[in-house]
Length: 431
Length: 174
Image (tube, rainbow over all chains, first blue to last red; front, side):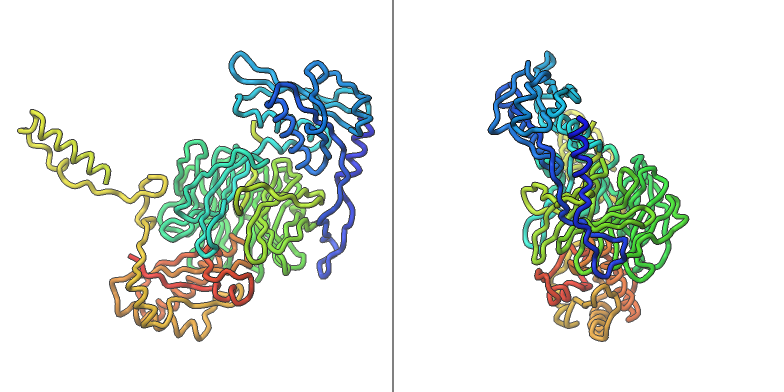
């Protein structure tokens, strides 16, 4: 495997075309559209009629979506039998141009569930790299395929898994002057799409809890933006802060026990934190101006947020109790909607400098890189492995869609949504 | 509402049964006060109760005051002379109609991030509210809110449309 791994190590960082941006300080580089050359991975259909083939199709599609691989199959290549799954004819795959092979089979269980056996082979070296069985309810067969693709991605790139995840976002329809907005949830590949709210009230900014079982979002109630907490399984929701206050931009703490949010009154917006079950909010900022978009560091010790206290929107970091507030963004333009990476090493943000673009910087404000080139890209959300950022791309003249971009600098990929979408939130990895 | 219907049915059932001669406790027969409920069915605070717009009075406000809307510059919440004149006329109408409340609703154009625009809308609405109060409108008749960039009135992605969307609207409510 040494050779294939070396190949990936060369290609994934995509250090190509780091064009300097005009007017920006030298630390800020553009990596938009950086090129990856990709490892070819053969994914022959697993035996077992439609289900086996369907699982292999999902795996191939997931691998393509990572941007790190060129899958071949299951279309155009033969089904691979159960006996060959663990001991493939490496020579054949080598001649087919594959560097790796994903094989497997589906085994029904006595309890009605099924197990998907997943094998990853290094074709170049002619040996098995990993194998694992994933047992799921029959209706959840796609999740077993995502887990197999996650195994392949993690083993070959050394990065954490991120494919067996869900996305919540705001599904949009109707005229822009009277937009119907509903919170929708779907798998990371767009399947199993359903709506969580009915669309009676305008909703924005849904965000997952750290376990992926709850959401916080901002909904209009009695003509005011208000933070709601929604339990996904039961559909039950409640107001976070009762009493007619203007509250928005909520996010959970990494332990799921607290929620940070913005509270606007008397022309001043500050950041507060409150127990996720309710109680008295504690004020964390008091500077005159707009303090909003708070996001916890993964260890819960710090909060990044945006503030215009210095005249324009810029990024600040403070301790979780509100102490030690200091500015971290000093590049050209304005900076907004920061989100701390689940790995802790980066902060994703929206930079406003003519156009709106997504970028990442270190928590101390260094090494800023711009990753996208849309007219208005905003609202970043991290994949749980900290390697991809999903965001909201708004086209000039209308049209709002979701895209995901690798932080290593590949092209942004459109997320499949059945209608316009905004404000994506990427779930943690499902267990 | 449902509660009182069920209660009513129970009272009728009681009356039809042999227990009818027993006098029901008076509080059971009294109409049930329904507490306001939120979208999740929970009891909500008085400040969370839905508001009803008043189209006839709104049309009268627009006719008499000239407009129910004032406009702002990019990323601004300062009221220019035209905005102040409009709000002064709105204040006169509000003082002549003491039984009406107003929700002062701030909006932003699409060229701002969603969270910031929520805050900016509140800032604009608050500027308009402060001016109405300075003209003598009692503060307890005025509500302040923000729609951020969620409710544009003009849909183009150009300066003309953005200028129309950077606004605060005085919405009469009950």
